[in-house]
Length: 321
Image (tube, rainbow, N blue to C red):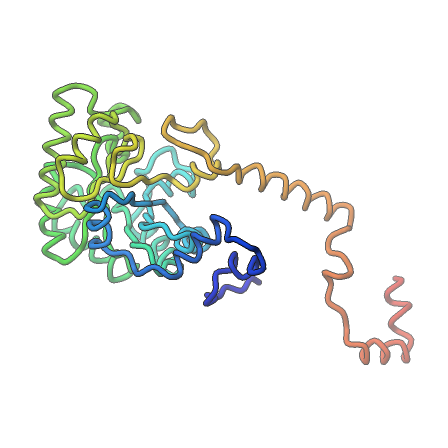
């Protein structure tokens, strides 16, 4: 049994209220509580002001709540969950129903950040009408405030229809994981003049079609810088260098909760896997040594019930047996 509540004061702040100066965690938590709801207009304003946009993936209630309380701008329920949550070798197997399930859990946690959901492979590639219908499901059934789709000029018609349906759309160019078979693996894109020109045209087309932002993944920094300067909507980089309007990472990469070497662009801010391994090993030892649970961690009969048992000769003898 575990209890979940929303407190008016962030837990980190309440726990350290006697401190002389707030820690970065406390400042982020306080900012996340106090700041206004993030919308597409917020992100556009940040680009105009040159203020970096912070984004991260989340796939469940607990992690999404921590991301939101930290004050990040965008929470993405990425189809990367197929790999980091379900153990698949690519993002391709995840289904619409599964994405909706995970998005609903994240929705319950997120109060301030903008919530965007990845449209999974097969949910929009075959037919634009089906794509619009599936995007509407994300908004109506899961509470998403925007959807992300992969592809450039070939997605213009779909983006336009989604925008006409009042659904904010985040584009995705460069290394697009749903195209892994066509690309021949997870490889950096846009390395030739022709490929670079194609990405710039794709970005301009997505902006014209109505995307509110574009994720740029796995492309040279120089190309990302040119696209960011060319379009008026925010660019969000992942493996695209520091010149984008914002950055996104997969939470499991950031926390070292994956089981493979990190990509070049990943910075690991904590080793949560090692913390978990140590805690699990200690738990196992305590249970085997019968030091957990302790007396203090056990429930007891009320004193009057214990006295009654003693009077009928049950308590002490039974405890010994």
